[in-house]
Image (tube, rainbow, N blue to C red; front, side, top):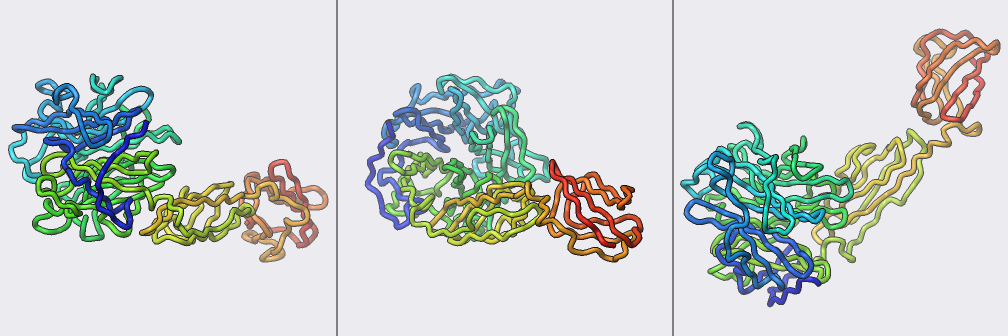
Length: 487
């Protein structure tokens, strides 16, 4: 059964990226940093709740996504660490993931007493990310690998702070991805990526950070608290951005970005997509910037639900999916084609403002509309297309013809220079061949040149060959061709 949400909504022309605010926010008081999933006919939420310098993770459930009921009378669901453990003071920024009949809860933890609740005025020595697993979502066992991801050294992009994980399991490559908020010592936060093959042991991506602030004003200081979901081939991310003004923490807005590899992100051209000033403005709920977005897509109703921190609890906004995979996308793209090995072709796609092609190998530039493609084997290229009104993907299949590398009616010598052949002379063929055995022998059968693993279309001869008639023999796979050479 799908979650049904009954709301009186403010209308926007582009719903997916310009959200409509629930007029009776907050939907859950005294709560922050939500993470949600839909389990059968129930929406389940885990959230942070702090008091007197201690924060804990709690849980709630809902049938309609609006009226929430606390589990276990609002008591914490995850125990703090023991006296000398890394997470014995504080838990927050939970992230829930369900798979293989198990729940996985990722969270921020530390053991440093927090005296001032204003980011940048204090440091947490032991802040890190932990994980716990559960069969029912309420009774948790912490991972023996805890903490599963730690901040970097003092010079790293995540050297001062690491928090706010958002985790996804990619069925296609059987890999877990964790995007997380990362802060260096200059306080210009970015978003990093960790990968895992078992949900417990994580390694940071060599491409980190994968999303940074700017160049636009709304997130020039940094990007924070990501939320990522996967829709078909596309990863969608919502995140907070801070502008370079004195009251930046009161001016946080929410941006939107998309990716097809989880590493290279394209920000929506008309960011930001949401802030606390969207109508209707409710002083109780909107007296502080929107923070820590958590987005759930409800398939049956084609709607996104976004839960986020307000001034007095967790707020809700809603949007239709009408830009991602829009039927109104006007896209044209190169048709599938066949090339010979070693040849190249120019791809062309139209209909967007920004592009990203994968895989990148064999492409002159994967981030333009018209890259030159020269794959060595048959390859399907997928391109992400992004504009203000359309976000979608298209594919082009380039078949590399490897079986026609030797063809008596096609393969020939088109040039020998200098001729007669001297050391350093080149014999140029009219097409590329790959991993071929090439020999040159005279009419008496004497071998004058041999190359057992030749690829390309230009042979460089290492010795002099006198004038006369010779045979160029090419063996590629199971094909043999003899070409007469007049030198």
